[in-house]
Length: 444
Ligand code: SAH
Ligand code: SF4
Ligand code: F3S
Image (cartoon, rainbow, N blue to C red; front, side, top):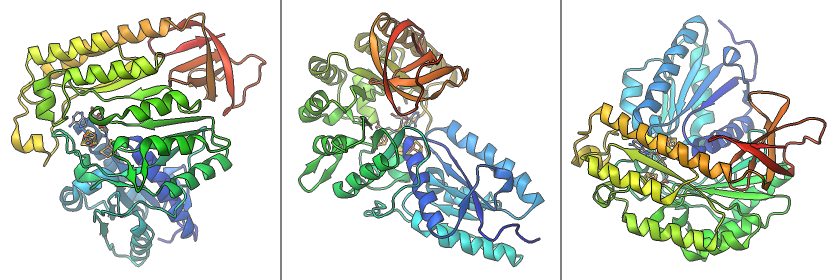
């Protein structure tokens, strides 16, 4: 069997967080430079790359389901399958021993090796044998400076400001899959911001597992975000995520002072019980979290606050859960991602504690929180009715091409009938809100 085209065609599919989205854009850039082309159509691809996530068991399950589909494809024709990202890093043995399907594995710090690994795998396949290649070294230095990402189209450009994580929250696999924390050179970051603006992007989202640990010489995150927000052509700058343990007043003030920095803070709470927070290794108490929220709201009264919460962590009692529930009532988040605790191999929690909350109890707790948060989100969204909001137009609404979709400064979704008015993704417009649901504001 011979290949149809001389330049190998690659299809890449990305799971997990924005960091993976951003990494896939880097991978595309590095591969294109070496003569690979890309296709949206998996059926036509010579190489299928799956950029994976390992954060919870269901993330794994989704990826295994995808791999088993690829098995079918690979029986019909020559195909090189590469697994990238956090699961590749974490499940090396499982993926190499149990999955003969996988030809190439590359972890988040090893993407510079991908062009060579893929070329070798393709060449060996053409000669009728299979040479597998694995690149799984984590690095203390790799920040991919010098490689401008090949971005997905849209209004938003991801810009990674730091890689890895040194926090070792006891439930979390990220420090093992992405290695040690390191900050990127601010000059490389500003260059990327200018490149994004030149490419027509209107919004930049700065990414890091804990942006407030950003340090580079004299630079901290507050200084960095202001410098990025000064990029000509950029209308909005967002960031994710800060850790509540170290949110400096200077960052709150920077957000307040700079008109282009969005008034939206995603501040993962994880739990409301001090005992559970301590077991999680989060290093703040419920009261400290509340005090931070108060400080933020004092300076930024209209801030949109969102969060992440885990239900059913090891030994979480009904009382502990009630603490979380009360905290959610008290803070009044604009929205929240709520997860069942999922034990991850090799984490501190997996080694030291017992995953002893039954699955149905985890599920019931998630449902309770989802329900109360839905109510709070709706109440908060209803307050927009009658007000004018500034919207960055993103695209046509998913449900109907006669409607436009965009986001407020606080990242709340707005939908409106396009009618005959100007509809140009990437522009800022003002919309008066006349109705709201828990998911959407409706503009006139
Ligand atoms: N660095 C980010 C979190 C990245 S992971 C931060 O600290 O803010 C995104 C979210 O996934 C976390 O905030 C947490 O709520 C959730 N998460 C992480 N590990 C998990 C696990 N083992 N089980 C369930 N949820 C988990
Ligand atoms: Fe995971 Fe904690 Fe690091 Fe976030 S800060 S990535 S939750 S270890
Ligand atoms: Fe992101 Fe999943 Fe890795 S959330 S950092 S892709 S484990």
